[in-house]
Length: 188
Image 1 (cartoon, helix red, strand yellow):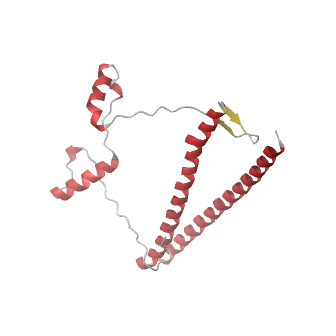
Image 2: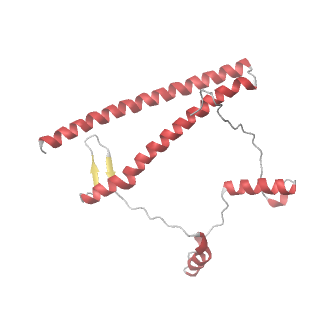
Image 3: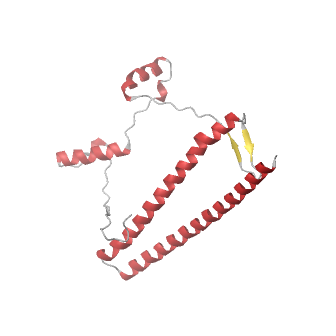
């Protein structure tokens, strides 16, 4: 290994150490924030706060969740870039199947098979599966969000609950929807 490569790896190791320190500090900060929110909620419960007192607290939690969600999405994007792009491409270029780093981290490349049936071809695909003795993998499925939308629409249209013989279970769960005010500290 030449001096330039050694220097580059040394800088990268220092950079990775700094990233690990920042990650650990962020996780500690999140744990402190979770603990503070929990303590505040306990205090709110103890005080028997009124609804207007709950709104800024809820807004603060929502802003926190939105920011964490955004950061999580961005970090997931970086991870996916490495997982599905940079690492497989680099391993392929360098003809590597698996590799273990000095710290014991190991990566090996596998190939996932992704398969789906396009909605427009569903009947033909199902027929092919049945003709080739694979009909047992066909299942009927309604996505939960589709079922929720259908139930809401049906009850609104008919003004009735579902009859017992429908075997459709419906429950109602009130929820609060939050919008940060123009001058709110909870606005992103």
